[in-house]
Image (tube, rainbow, N blue to C red):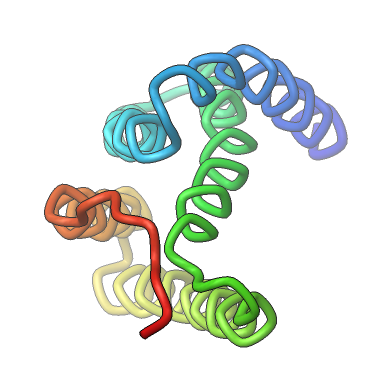
Length: 148
């Protein structure tokens, strides 16, 4: 079952990436990230509400659709702000932030799960993080970086 779930998520991630690639080219990566974050908020709520194995598989398939596209769009959007010649330093920070979130997200989830005994409640904490990201991103202006 785990292998089937993995294949399902990877396949739908590929489909989602291809499906939204042109939209990213025409509307821009910030638009795609906003759509993706809203999508992820919905996915976490659906995961909270999933009450059967088949419902969980459906949510996992939907989650895959938003997986690949947000990764590609966030890198493209971030690259827009990097001054020429500083790519290594800026993507080093990008990597550090990504690794930090890869630790903090599961830590928050696990701590809530352990303390409340409720993984459904813990998944809602992830939607709060997505909501915070959406709020912060809404204030970011798309302006090419310049070196003084």
